[in-house]
Length: 434
Image (tube, rainbow, N blue to C red; front, side, top):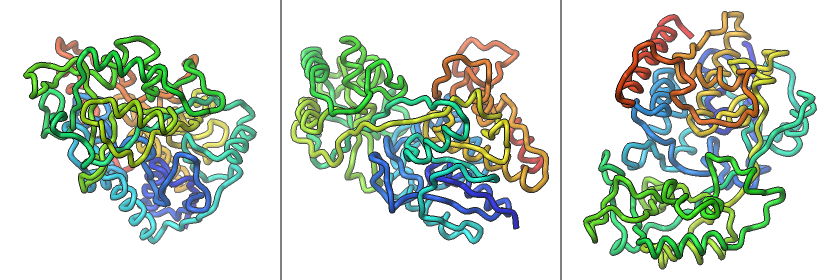
């Protein structure tokens, strides 16, 4: 039986291991936990969600919703487990953090063709191998990968949002509602007046940060920017970001609030909320002091404070092909956020595609070509596009998919047409057998 090593059991590595095993390939899945953990990891489980518990929008008119549907049709392990452990989050797919990781771990450990190696990998193994150690790759393996490619890594810093207990939120001031009343009312909303917002921004911008070596505002990855950095960029920055009030009505006034902090369920038991978009690297005491000024969170019990950690990614356009394989040696592939795809679902998609391509290579079959009309294929082609200058990680979006020939007046109609075309192309690939 053919064998492939998969290094790392995060979202990408877990998906890759499952897809390889389901195609009749023996898998050695290496994971350094529980013996060693990065500063951002807390659980011994596979596919740990270190930041938000949300896999974002689940509607076909947004690109990540399309990517999810593609992965579902492809038999994704991660989407299967996410759907099975879903918690209410309006139009988003959010999961019970522990239940989700537990299900992924259980299924991988039970698979007869997957052998788990609980050990840190400190070198780039000979192929066939898929390295999916994520943006929190250990120092030893980071150095080995840098030596393997003979080029420098790029890096950025990332932040995780705080968690609070549900019972500690003052629901006399907060209320349940989803933005634009889409789906069920799954978010707790805390409204701020202009005066309260002004005081909050001032306190946040001047709060004391934890020491993070090498951190500077200009190096913060824009997709996961700490709220205190946003506060320093301008008075209204937060109101156009995580504190935007649009689509919400404060039942106490009957009007749209000046600003809003949203809390989302973090577990199925409905006992834990996370502060949506409130990634931070303030000192823990400062987080308690500043965030407790939010109406409804005066007596909030913080179950986990926000943390800052290093994220690392490759300059993939110079190194990888559209199936995330080393251009020099396609039996060595990479997957996940270290390739420059940003987000849980995008990482999963890269693990899926890297595994499908690797399976074809080791079994002597043609490597399937996922076209740019599909979200899965468009992501692979984005990270491998050698024309890109100043490469930065990016979430999936409709602009990286092949454009439509027909023009549409409404953006939602255009996006749904792109989604329909994408799914038709994907169904053709699946019918051909991949």
